[in-house]
Image (cartoon, rainbow over all chains, first blue to last red; front, side, top):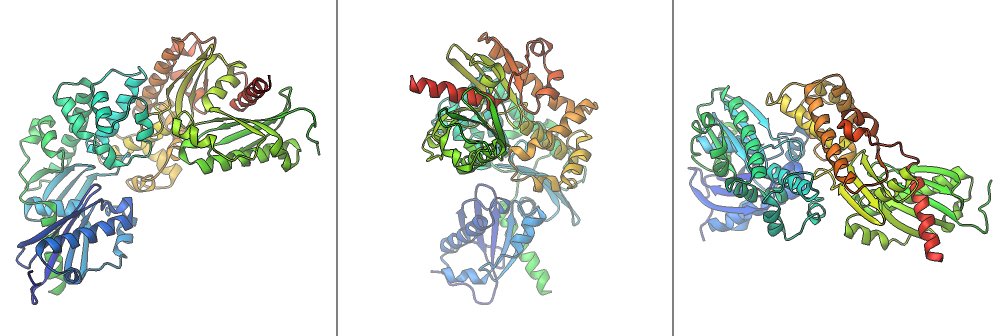
Length: 298
Length: 298
């Protein structure tokens, strides 16, 4: 088993989203030592759940790195969490009696941008369970979208899933066109017809986002309803990109589980400007923690 | 104080919806003795809450009738509840150890139809906090829509409110056209700009439905976004009516808080066929209880 290096800091980078929490442990040079994953860490959907997911993913990353569990207390943590853009959620999260050496808290968007571009300046759009845009140029940051499901997050997996269910239920009532989504979603969820409404009556964004691959597949196969949903979502993402590009970021990346499938549906002028992300959000969280830690010491 | 008549049954009619629960007490001839009201009694949104609302509204109706509280145990109750169209909710509600002499359980739609037409045959569309359609001809009944918020309930107050908030948030991000809804909803909820998303992050259908009068007012004043929302909702209600009319019901009525304001937005061919309801849903619940009670004795 590796021993924790005695004289140099160990960093924890955490990317906490609505579906998963990813953590990595790195040394002072930014070398990756281990990674870990846990469940939802969207701070606005349950503070305690988010905190538990963060600690669990960190413990797993330490284990993966071959470091002993008590190393948790030595970690300088950079947490990039969905939901902390809401002031009340940010304040609540800052009050956490966390088990780490220190915690630097920011949004999932900030660390995603840091990770994708290897620097703070840049723009990212996340299209996963939720959706949102972020641009940072010379310390000025702007966040767009990301207002949560079902109010916002257009073009996201949760939004696509809900739109699909709405269309399926309309078709069930003969109040909307038939769609191949019906059979696909019934197969995936193992429910028939209107029982879908009962099954999803209290479903959250993650459950709806599970349906997004069905919607993408049906759209790619030419289903008219699915095509309309995907195109409406993609148009929103294109418009979001257009707004971000007005700030002249050096780079723009599209991230999240829907990044690849959505790209062909985007406005070609936007798609051409997308760059490949250099690293994942959790690597950006490590860089953020390093930067804040060094700034705090200097 | 009136005494409960010794030799004839007393009936309780309850109309339980997502926002309010209305009860009335009537004698064996159907004469109204008293009315009472309480909070939400949508059985799919919390069984205990619904049961408490039913009992409270019944107690208030007894009090209004000048009958002593212990009369509760003599009441033959007809309960028409939102949510009991879902089989699991219906079964759970049937197991209630209720305080009445007997309970006959059905949907809010069935009793609304009974009340509006003074007979079982007919069709109703409810456009209030939620939306749905119901038609009953010679014992065959069909329910359309009413799949709950946010999956279904198009054209309802909750749906309108959510669509308005989505449009306001798009406008805040410069990703959608400006709308006068922004100022109206900010005024109503006393929040500014994107704080709206935080305020409504966990809002339920009743809270969104509170915004519906703003949407109707903005639409009537010519706001393009509000007009589009109201027209899309009204088109759905017109289509729902078209489906119900295929069953050839003797009468069709539009009920609920949005019935009056939505009527001018409906397809004129549908609007012309609407009749004025004869009585409220709770009077239909009394008639339903009488019918089932008599059928049980014969």
